[in-house]
Length: 367
Ligand code: UD1
Image (cartoon, rainbow, N blue to C red; front, side, top):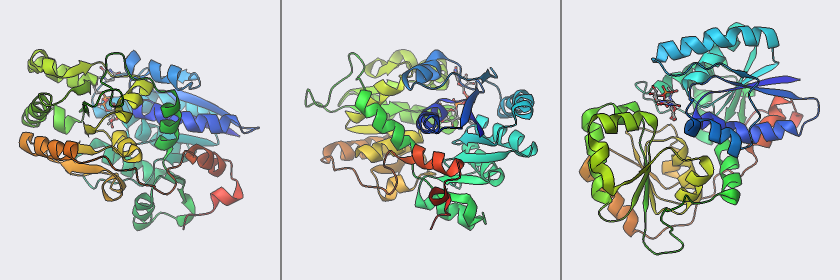
């Protein structure tokens, strides 16, 4: 059996790790990786391959950055001859980035089977490029690997064949559990265990927050205000760095502890020790829920509602006063134990491998 995983952006690499390990253990399975090159900085790509012991890509498409159409088209053009030549039994795509939809569309047109890891998440906000990518990818995939019951419900409501929907759980929790066992807090970072001073971790990179000057000023104003109360550690995505430099905020933001994007293990240790996370990331909403750490997500919608209903996540507007008030309230509240969420248990990679390999029990349609 021949399986191809297509990855391209930082959040894809984390999701690949547990599945690559699970597939490796299965005799008779050939699994290879295609890296689109959507993310190419060492801090956004190479360190993840090294730390998470990911298999070296058999192909690297080196597409780089561009508009959505340019990036998607470049991936499709470069991946088509590879998929046509290799003809894998299943093409596995991950999450909701441009690499995901480009690979799914190319594979489907070659009549190859597409499996989507993290199927069924919906924010119902089509102004988010990721929402468009999710809808298109799920409409093309015939192996829909859902992380949570809400994702299963969304897929059913959209009319997907129940036999194609598999409630496998959240693969991010697999890699998070691995990382917690290995993680090392970055040098110089505050330590929640060692001293009692709380600290906040912030990450902001969505176009709606970063490319809109008003929203960006509001968010940065909130983080600067919070940093007067306690340290705010802010690993900066390349897009955000460009905006900070352009608007002259970068120089003024010295009260924040700004850094390059962190390797996954360092980031995990940093988050695990934090008292609060302020973010617009998808993955961090889930990681903080699993860890029981309060999270403020600077967005009006989330495709991961379970993190709000069962977890520690709260949506906040891109408004300085709203963010600061919500942060102060969260910092004053005692930390609660993490919730237990069905199939967020570290075994999702194994379940997906079983589904892909056609193990009868795992291939059972979800309830
Ligand atoms: C992509 C995903 C987003 C995900 C994020 C994680 C899409 C539509 N979006 O957004 O869902 O949360 O990855 O990081 O696929 N850049 C670099 N070096 C890099 C990569 C990017 O400098 O290695 C800069 C470039 O200026 C580029 C910009 O960041 O134009 C945006 O990169 P892009 O890949 O288009 O999307 P992300 O914002 O990273």
